[in-house]
Amino acid sequence: MVRTPCRDENGMKKGTWTPEEDRKLIAYVTRYGCWNWRQLPRFAGLSRCGKSCRLRWMNYLRPNIKRGNYSQEEEETIIKLHQQLGNRWSAIAAQLPGRTDNEIKNHWHTNLKKRMNNKHYKSSSSSSSSSSSSSSSVTQTDDQETPNCSGLVELAVDQLTKSATILPNADETADHLQVPQTDHDHLDNIFQLSSPQPSSSEVSSLTTDNAPVVLSSMNNDDWVNYVEEDNVISSMEAYADVQFGNDFWTEPFLADTSYIPCGLLTPSMDSEFFYPLFD
DNA sequence: AACTGAAGCAACCGCAGAGCC
DNA sequence: GGGCTCTGCGGTTGCTTCAGT
Image 1 (spheres, protein in one colour):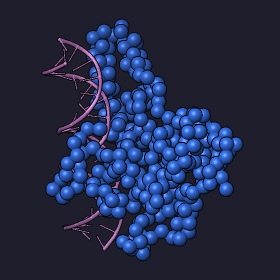
Image 2 (cartoon, rainbow, N blue to C red):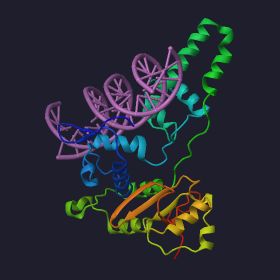
Image 3 (cartoon, rainbow, N blue to C red):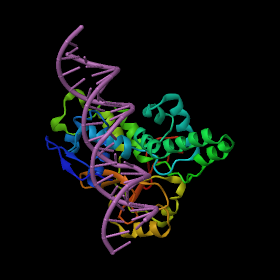
């Protein structure tokens, strides 16, 4: 959120990521996987170093990132693990699904460390007050956790990472790195986008249990209005699988944009595959 | 309203380790 | 074993926002 965009001596962009850069990275990694962070920016059309792309993806863009306030349980886990492991943030993060090492590290330095210091100070200065101080040190957090954004992106990445090494551009692709045709077919099934306009009865089948929604842009305002009026999608943590012409990306669903749902990915279902809503 | 210091956190940097040739 | 590349980790930076004056 913070750095002013600039470029290093190699012409690589630095600083805050723009929404457009995020879209490019999400679209690329979602579709082709992280086959080589160093090479990835070139294929994804990004003027960033691979390190920066990896960091952005791992800490901010990848699916299931949990953002927002820490629960009491999470904070207790961090404190306990930090006592056991020290500053091994990646090891601590591994025990906290959805949290990144960077985020945990920041949270520790900005919140927990101070609380622990205060707690230690209070307990050492007044043993009789220890119980109240310890409980207040962790219970004041707002337990409103951001829901997991599991769904399309997670599934897509999972499927893609199972699909061996992938390069997108046939012109620049070495044979040994190309995806087998069967994988392409499989991916094409997952990313199937086009669909006819849904009927009202079909719309009603879109319940909030069926998040996230796969959408394609077909500029049908009626459909979007319908969705907004019934508050079906806007209440969900949905990712839109968006395609404009040959340009493709995945992004959090925005209620004020024009997309047409064409299918569902429901992690609660047994099957991992994409369910077209409409034939 | 303007200023200032603190807090929060995204992003960068440098290093270490793993893997390959 | 040595050199190189790549990835991942932990420490640190620095910009934005917030709260206090």
